[in-house]
Image (cartoon, rainbow, N blue to C red; front, side, top):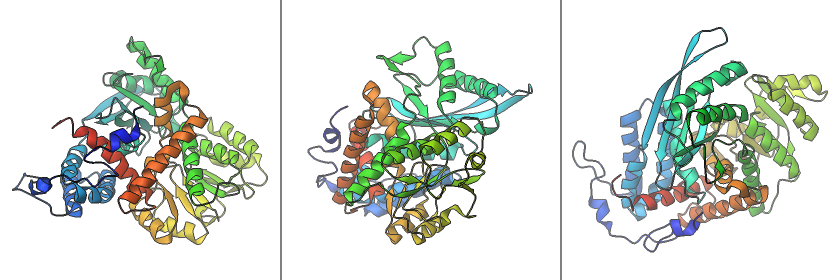
Length: 470
């Protein structure tokens, strides 16, 4: 890894500099489609960029929301140096968008067709790296949205890696293991044309766990001679707990910054996948009290907390494909299932949304705040809506954005054999300090969402400035 600040802070421009460059860029037209369109302020440039995204992809609401919230954060950069608005215009368009048919045979012998994706968004910093997601929520808009966000998330880690996201619109929970193996093999047969150890490294995401990544690697290895680089594994599942652990390390760092800690905190966890369960396990190590886990069937609530033994039971239940969290109440005399009817009526200190995208909205934030919640930390990609972020700020609730909290998998992949828990905690602390300092520099003290977007953008943009019009 190169020195983080070497890439971010340069002699003339960077996050902690005044960006004193000629203002001639402000006189250049940002768009020239129907006459020259210029901007006078950074916010005007941000609005023009959002309008351009809507013109091209107005049907992809999730992607538009992602672009809109990001550009609002970057408007202060455009004010200081208008040239960055032109880089942002390039960044909105992925380098490569791959969509393909995935044909596979189910257990009845029927040919099924699924749509596969891989968006290779930006490789300015290095080879692509990013998650694969399997689920009904996966479409061109959600993949582009996650890819756009991963540019900044991967960039702020300080490692020389690019950003990519992919997946398929298949429901993994109602498929047999044999069906998933056949699907993964078909999916990888096409995807293998575009990825490789030194080109693009997919990692685990929503609906893609150790078993799926194993099937994918098996097929990749069968059709390619090279399946590793420099002794480092390709399509490895060894870092499957890193995302959950980084979420908790970030939370502890943020609370320490406020003179507090996780010890004794009552924590509500949304979701029960691999990230949610690794968050619960790491919270127990810090002396916190996980209260809930959930899935599409509902949620389980342990008033006295989910201890290690109870979590092991839940791990065994969720290891069966398609198993619902509700089965847990058979093995516990104290657990409540969907009681109270609304999960957010449960008093808690910290909420960890580790499930679906946009699972926490403004109304949810108000309910959490009314029940004493002091922080919402994302353990899932884009789990908090733009409306919810505004409510969090208004109610004075701490917010940990996924751009920052979910960096564990990227860190572990880049560290390789050195990816210990201690090294992960150290990297999370370093990134948190950089983001906090960036937010302060751009007059957004305490706004980690803005700080993360700016820090990630500057690192990618400064490299792109050296590449010309590409």
